[in-house]
Image: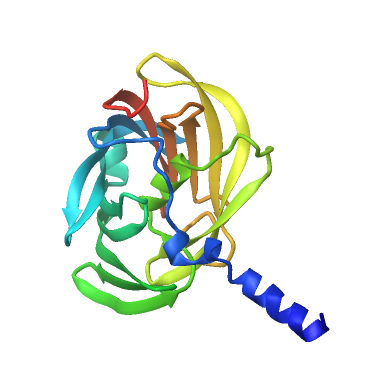
Length: 268
């Protein structure tokens, strides 16, 4: 076999179905419709560390344009002193198919004095994914663009569903899994970083063994104030992979969501 033939074979292998959208399918073992998690929110900014309100994460069955789907809704609402200092009232909604592929994402956010609304819709056609991204900022349209990619790409909420189903059992602290992520209208390279196992006592009084995870962005993107670790999470080290803690970087400080109640889990 000559070098040209070998090169062609290697090229074909590099385009193996594992990298194509048709193979973005993930078997869901971690959650089901009816899961409901409630969180206490904490705002951290310099010397300010205060309880800031409540949040929730709810998963339900849905039908999205004729496709059987999971609907995930996350609410973050600040109140009290922290809410007066920096208001956060966000509603995030994601539709993913039963193979955990993103279909539609929307986020309505009141953060500080600004209001934003964004939509991301995903269309799968052969080995390509077309994503239409729209954003309004304080009532004015900032962009309406369509991007095309050949790789699996996730939004703010679908990436959480993906992470909950990753196999961390063979990973060592410092290992990472690379994915693509849509931030606004930009596709960025993101790493799911595995930092090992620890324990954490949640606000429901239970102590959980948890997997420490961070998400880091490879290339510069203004959507994240902390380019190294814009999102951190603690997932239960069991078959449910419940997000016990979610830390998110804001324009000012960070917001921490700590589990205070959970019901409707998939696995006992």
